[in-house]
Image 1 (cartoon, helix red, strand yellow):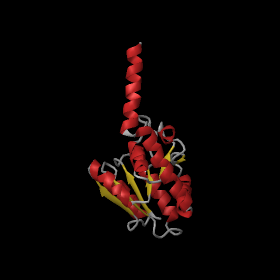
Image 2 (tube, rainbow, N blue to C red):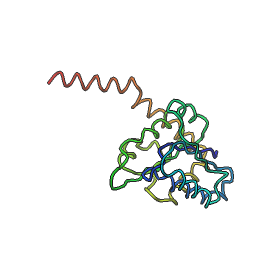
Image 3 (cartoon, rainbow, N blue to C red):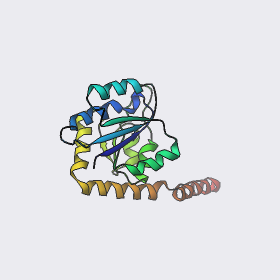
Image 4 (cartoon, one colour):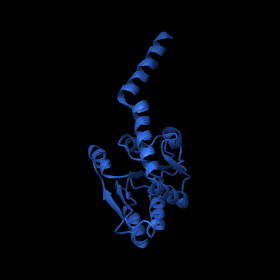
Length: 184
């Protein structure tokens, strides 16, 4: 284990700096741990500077923009998905589709307790407090130390998505809701 991935616009509310700082705390214990971040945005240079200042140039890579259909294919090349959305004065993540796509791809997910995220992933992802670098470090370390947890999160996460968010399931929910409305 050790190939991690994250996806999102490089904006303050995505919390990438907290993930990067957590990886810095793990670099001695896990020398093979690496993170690829897919996305672009105004924080590309500040994040690159942070990566360099922490000596993580050989471990954390800003991969830039990748089209949606390619991201879904790329997820299969990784072992862990990590996101860390942050509530700001103007936004709180309501759903975070990237977590769901990673779970559907069979990846264990580490994410934050921002907005609606913990309610969406339920207990099928590791949820840590926002801006808590030590909790992020602990969650990553827990997964790296326990292959059983990785398998458990992978299987449960994928089943959860299939049971609750597959096209067939969502279409049935809409159909039931429309039928209910027509009865009124």
